[in-house]
Image 1 (cartoon, helix red, strand yellow):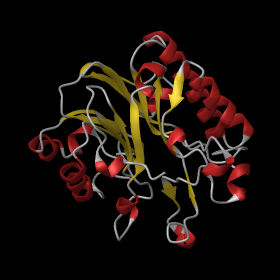
Image 2 (cartoon, rainbow, N blue to C red):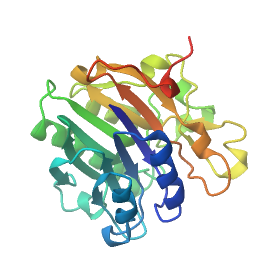
Image 3 (cartoon, rainbow, N blue to C red):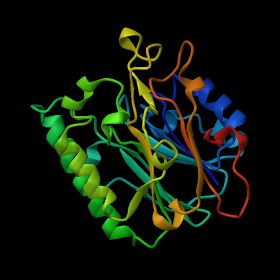
Image 4 (cartoon, rainbow, N blue to C red):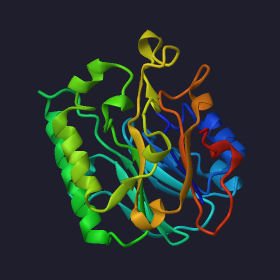
Amino acid sequence: MLLCSWNVNSIRAREERALAFLKRSAPDVLCLQELKVVEEKFPLEKIQALGYHAVIHGQKTYNGVAILSKSEPSDVFYGVGDEELDAHSRLCGATIDGVHVMSAYFPNGGDATSPKYRFKLKWMARLREVLDERFKPSDPVALLGDYNVAPFDDDMALDSFRRTVLANDEVRAALTHIREFGLVDVVRPFFPHGQLYSWWDYRALGFERNHGLRIDHVYTTEILAARCVGAQVDRKEREGRGASDHAPLLVELDILGGAVRPSLQISK
């Protein structure tokens, strides 16, 4: 099962890229973040024409998440079950081929003095509660998305990121609390020394200078983590005009005893 997470930073701006990516990479599940459209404006028919089902939780101008899947989803849910926090469309979930998949767009947080930062911490705490309420650590759960947190110092190209709400001690502790539900960062074992980035600032030649951050993640429960056989960031999707500031993150799970796709083989 090929899982993918991608913050498209506006599906309307990235529609053709997204459709081309689906054709080329053919993930079994693609979790999208930052749609920036309501459901009615989402390119559903074009995606269905490629053989995908869609769970869409949109919002005008900001936020928005979706799950695209080759198999029909069930047990669909939206949001974190909190009126204040669900004013933002940041979470949707569904069961796909027996795997409980969630697409999450964690709040950025602005800066440490901003109410947005308190909102971020509250949202992350509530997400942990959602995990506790809906699942058991023994369940096959996969949380994909833009977490807006770099867990380790080597997930950052610049030391200056360490002082921000993307990597300070408090927000890392909030992520640790989520992970302690029983989740595993399945990408990290393939890149134990870091320096794998999924986001680069549009400004100051961030991508060209590789001044990136690893803030997009796939966390799974142990039952799935034990079957993870490959992980990679598709840097080509960050190249050229009209690219999102994020690149797709792909993870392969050997659910049926198959072989890892060549594109995800890791160099030793």
